[in-house]
Length: 243
Picture 1 (cartoon, rainbow, N blue to C red):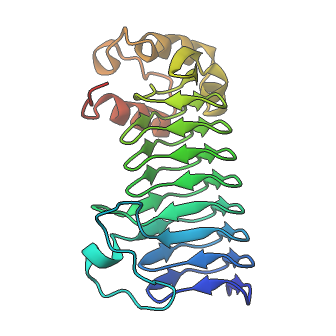
Picture 2: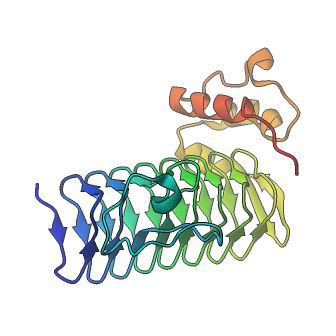
């Protein structure tokens, strides 16, 4: 189906739009950017602005086509399918990789995705969430209103971050954390059940979620849906960062 782009929206050169996207009044999408299908992009959202880095160029991308030079144009933005990107959301160009938002995510009003961030699938960013540069938000995570996530931090799959938190270190898979600085308070059993785990599977996985078990050695993913097993295994195998 054709896209519905409001007459006041700005879609710059170097932007590739898929099908059946809605782009609201005064929204701005600047290239290089790739937008998939069935996305809803609200009024005054800005996608593809230059990274907030003093050393980088700030071209007038709404007037000038991308040159193909990453030092001038950035490394682009890639947005998948079926995302809801609400009013005043901002998504910046990458500096060394593409800033990416996967499929089926919901970015509420005024949330900010900085340069080089990676958001996987089925993530919720509540209103006024601010992600610093290079942040990774893994699938099924939920970040509460007004939360600030420090640069290079990773929020694990299925994690829930309480509103108003200041996240300064990685947040474990399917944990709940809150505060300033944010600290883990419990396991996100509601999130696990929504992902298809029954009580016995949650009980088996809980030691690993608390840092006390070995996924492969202890067979903790038995009874866990394959997609979630793959996700938590990938999280467990990720390179560690310093706190």
